[in-house]
Image (tube, rainbow, N blue to C red):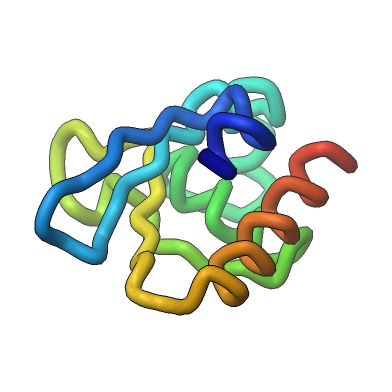
Length: 101
């Protein structure tokens, strides 16, 4: 619900039976400028550069989806096996970083 309400450009599909989920940040990466991010962070893939941007701007470190094979491009992996308080803090930081970009 948080992602839908606060991060409308981020795709999310609820997983079943796992604590890992993939969030589709493709639209956000495109809006930030994929090529510029890659050049800025000297990265081989836009989602890897976005991860570095996200760490710098929000303090939240997520795993790039491209590390998990084809189809993961533009996504990040999030471990949701945590308390709602921690997840809300992480999502609040991500939301603020994107809104301030």
